[in-house]
Structures are given as structure tokens and as C-alpha cells.
Image: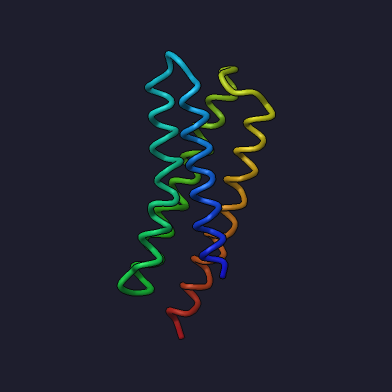
Length: 116
């Protein structure tokens, strides 16, 4: 059940990132970085759901988690350089936080089940 929520959240997050970045002119280097990390979260979650083993699942979800942290870094850069409003930053940061918490929980559960 959480996996479906996670997939839905990550897709919605990626679409929102892409749409927001599309409206930013003259910052293609930065927007490319944000788009790459923001969309990679969901791609790795999707891959992890089709993993060959629990270890593969954990590895893919850990990559998604790293991408989540990288995305939060780029969001901070956009906010601190006044390219992004506080309201937009807070919304993206909140959405990223939801995804991050579910990823951490999923990774911990999968690791615990590996040891059984």
C-alpha cells in the first residue's frame, strides 16, 4: 500500500518540479540539475518495486533517498538565490520530506526483513 502512495507522490513531485522549472528562464544549468534529481527519485522507486531481490530493492530505494537529499539541496539553492519564492520552496520541501520519510521507513523495513 505504501509503495503505491510513494509512487503517486514521487510522480506528482516530479511533474511539479518539471512544470516549475519550465517557467524559469536563463537558469538552464540549475533547472537541469533540479529536474534530473527530482525526477530520478520516482524512477528509482519504480525500479525498486521491480527489484530482483530485497537487496536490490534496498539499493534502489537508497539511491532514491540520495536523490531526494540532492533535490532538497537544489531547492535550497533556488530559494537562497531568490529564484524560488518561500511559498514554493516550502511546498516542494514538504513534499520531498513526505517522500523521504516513506523511503526511510521502507528501507528500514526491508533491511529488517532481510535479517529474518
